[in-house]
Amino acid sequence: MTRQSELQRQLWFTQPYEVEVRESEQDAIPAGSVRVRTLCSAISAGTEMLVYRGQLPEELGLDASIEGMQSKPSYPLQYGYASVGVVEEIGNDVAAQWRGKRVFSFAPHGSHFLSTCAALIELPADVEAEDAVFLANMETAINLAQDGRPYIGERVAVLGQGIVGLLLTGVLARFPLHDLLAVEGIAERRELAQTLGATDTCSPVRLGSQEADLIYEVSGVPEALNTAITLAGYDSRIIVGSWYGKKSAAIELGGKAHRNRISITTSQVSSIAPQLSGRWSKARRFAVAWEMLQAIRPSRLITHQVPLLEAEHIYKQLHETPDKIVQAVFVYD
Image (tube, rainbow, N blue to C red):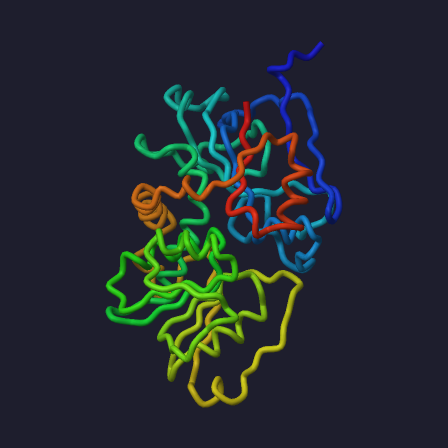
């Protein structure tokens, strides 16, 4: 009979709006690989909810840069990209010092997973697991900041204060800006944005006549692009960090957008921006992400910690009452 310690639990998206936790025996460790016991994994309320709702475009892989996610999505499938754990066992040809290391991985939600050492990122000694679980989203926030290239004294607006928006606000607050406006419909998130350094906040339905030099759209709502255009001044830049999946919306490119020579640029963290690729690497960007995690301590943004067996309940909450959750994290025994 298989001992409980030899079993693993993994989350599967079986069809739109349905998830299942499957229990199975642990696989043998291939040479050159390790087994990681997961401590916590963060749920993405953006991309992951597209998976949950069946809103992913069929022609694209889940992620262009993460091993195992390049194939076109089809159910049942595993997903998740923010796991923190401890290397519990090592395979042949793996240095003994890997055993016991705390690591981050772009692994799907599950109690254990196998990985090569090259695919793991070791946690700095002074970073807690609950902060490290934000590494992927912090890398996204840094990539957005780099793509926007904010200048000293600029007026910057961030549309959407979900996790990526909040982290981006925290990063931008370290720039010498004139104003940093956080636009968000949920009052509690506007308050969080202020604690992270926003100089002003407002609801999207209460925007005044202010203009911004640089606008980030990270709300996940396609209609917010028109809000960004409303905020844009002459020759302003709009950086779109949201992934809308199958969702689309009419964009008002006449009038102000046409005459103001607005630039709209999409930003995606899978690659380094071409203008930086000669000097920057993923490793260099991750080093900055660790520094920002230490400075911002985003574990304070976690509102829900739940065991994996409660996955069905927490995804239903995220779908039906997303305003009640800032960041949900699976915790493992």
